[in-house]
Length: 170
Image 1 (cartoon, rainbow, N blue to C red):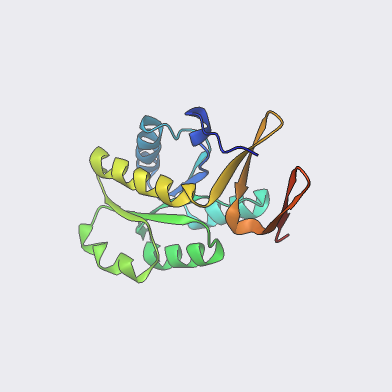
Image 2: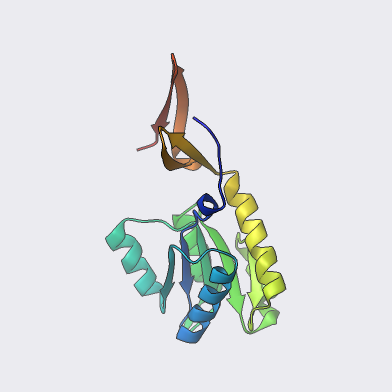
């Protein structure tokens, strides 16, 4: 197996955005498109909508951009619950109120962005995300077909003759 990455293959993130304001979801998606992450980006106006999608599609996200002020819900507590359920997911908090910067450190997260989102800080956030996730995934060339292997799903790897065999937890 080889570890080749082309520019196109770097776009392997599955990203969710939860914000109760549709314009803010579009804004995050616009920033993601600007940095080349327009594929596999899903916007949700509520946590319930996000959870229904995850359950229905039996999927997990690599990154979650989460608004802290979601109607009557506390985004920091919700973020903690969602990250605990999906241990491999990176969490980015977003808020119009910068005073939350102290509270977010109670939860494992990657970045805290303030609204309106500044391109400089968004780019820094994405650099950190890519650095953290690149050490968790392998992109394998299996006879001309590219496959992404998430390392946290691998139980062990063995070699038999000229074959590499991945054993997964499931």
